Length: 126
Image 1 (tube, rainbow, N blue to C red):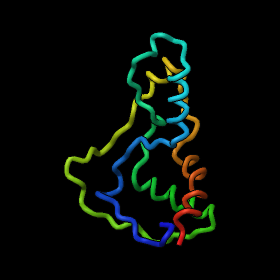
Image 2 (cartoon, rainbow, N blue to C red; image 1 turned 180 degrees about the vertical axis):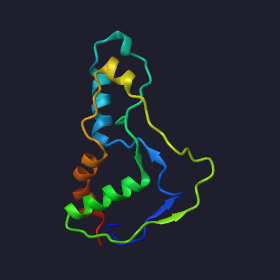
Image 3 (cartoon, one colour; image 1 turned 60 degrees about the horizontal axis):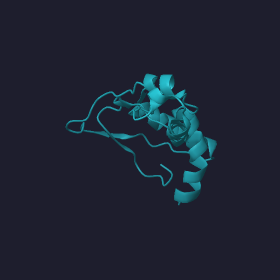
């Protein structure tokens, strides 16, 4: 999008994921490494935001984030076939991380994109 290229989306764009900004993952790792609760040791945790974002929503979030950086992207995405074996919807349960580590996501997808977009613009804009 930064280079004005066409965005290709597999399927109809309603496939959803629980996208997670990196700061949430870093926070969870720090909590796990410093937690004094013995029940939290040697556990496997889902680290995410705890909400679904469709690929169409992600496309719109990216467009809006670019506008915030003074970049206009007006092309529509090109939809293709669904990928074989692709899960249509995925949302992580973060309850275990909340209960045992005190994990609470600090950045939703939109906030994460607005934080990261200036870096991407500087690195990738043509």
